[in-house]
Amino acid sequence: MRSEVPRERLRFSSNLTMPPERRRRMKLDRRTGAKPKRKPGTRPDWKAGAGPGRPPQKPAPSSQRKPPARPSAAAAAIAVAAAEEEGRLRQRNRLTLEEDKPAVERCLEELVFGDVENDEDALLRRLRGARVQGHEDSGDSEVENEAKDNFPPQKKPVWVDEDDEDEEMVDMMNNRFRKDMMKNASESKLSKDNLKKRLKEEFQHAMGGVPAWAETTKRKTSSDDESEEDEDDLLQRTGNFISTSTSLPRGILKMKNCQHANAERPTVARISSVQFHPGAQIVMVAGLDNAVSLFQVDGKTNPKIQSIYLERFPIFKACFSANGEEVLATSNHSKVLYVYDMLAGKLIPVHQVRGLKEKIVRSFEVSPDGSFLLINGIAGYLHLLAMKTKELIGSMKINGRVAASTFSSDSKKVYASSGDGEVYVWDVNSRKCLNRFVDEGSLYGLSIATSRNGQYVACGSNCGVVNIYNQDSCLQETNPKPIKAIMNLVTGVTSLTFNPTTEILAIASEKMKEAVRLVHLPSCTVFSNFPVVKKKNISHVHTMDFSPRSGYFALGNEKGKALMYRLHHYSDF
Image (cartoon, rainbow, N blue to C red; front, side, top):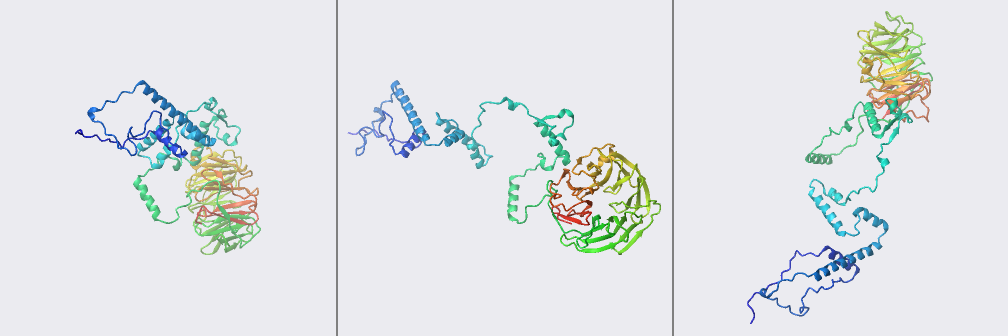
């Protein structure tokens, strides 16, 4: 009679997993085609008496089951021996696989995964731990998490060179660029950190402070929503998203040669004056051939508009008035001042100015606001005239002779350079001297110019040095230091001209061929691509000028040519 005790069903848990060592060995056996080996002392999964074609034995009642016996010392020894045997098999299989690997691959695996020769489980735990840590960091993207998983841990250096810890010193005396950065004789050698700080100070001094792009504290950060909206707006529009910078870059000035300004009226006489009209696209060319010519500027043919011939009057200087309605001209050996009215088409000679006792009128300057006319006289006199009536307002006197003079951008001050190397600053309304200082390193002044924005004063001397000063220091200090001394010319600097945007300073000497340079501001560095030495078509430069919006640059030489260049950085005339 069968027992009424219900049979117990064998339940197999789905959570049972194969150990990683056995999984790896099973995969390896499948690849090689060998049958998996059993551990010694193990039995098949079916019980004795049960097999294929045999009915399974009935389980014994629970009341008749015996509790499992505790493992004895022999069983523990068998388990240890089995583990050692499995380790030896795994080591043998690993060595067998690595024999076919090239040395480069083994070296790469060691660099990426570390030394896992005796402990592969440690590698698995390390990779698994890095992956878990990467998922906990919710702020990173999936790509960053993958990069972090694959990034190997940093290793400690095997040895440290004591010489690397010593601070390396840089020689400042044997380098002409570093020598200028020395503040005193004790700084013949500087450490790399101190040299880096010094270079940063020089850069900030040249740029007038820290540029906006270098200020990390003022950078604005936008939210994710705003950035997504900007991206959507960018993808919905079409157009030219790449544009040139508003400020002129230094190093190379993009420019091209244009047709000569006076190509339709060629001459062999020296060009003494070249100037662009302040309001129209016109350039004026005057020279020792007694003629003043006006040309339309188009960069291709530059058609002639008009020529004014002055009999027995070789022109020393010609200049437009501030409003562009008149042309003033003086000669080498005459006290007559010619005024050409462009609207009426009349030529008016001014033979004598009441109160002016000069025998020769040559050099003069027109104020930017169009109110005054300044005539450089002999014996150190400067004569101030009213532009409208051509009458004398007053005179100012300096020590020595007047080499050059110019108005400030607001027409309230006059800067005069003397033959003794001194610079005088005068007030126009009171005709009083506001300041007087010595141009550093100058023995004989030849030229002077002020910038349109009222920031710089440039002084040229007979030794070829151009000192660039801050205009405020020239008004307040008796011995101002120049911002930069330009030493690219070796003969006397006879011409100085700032462009209207105060980004270029043109310097030239009429005593040497090809002696003209364009200086970038505020870096005070010379553009390397001008002039082109191989062509040598510039010759001796006597006059220079920029168009009202710096689109063109013109200069006149002793061969009668008014050379003209198109500056690509500026889009307007």
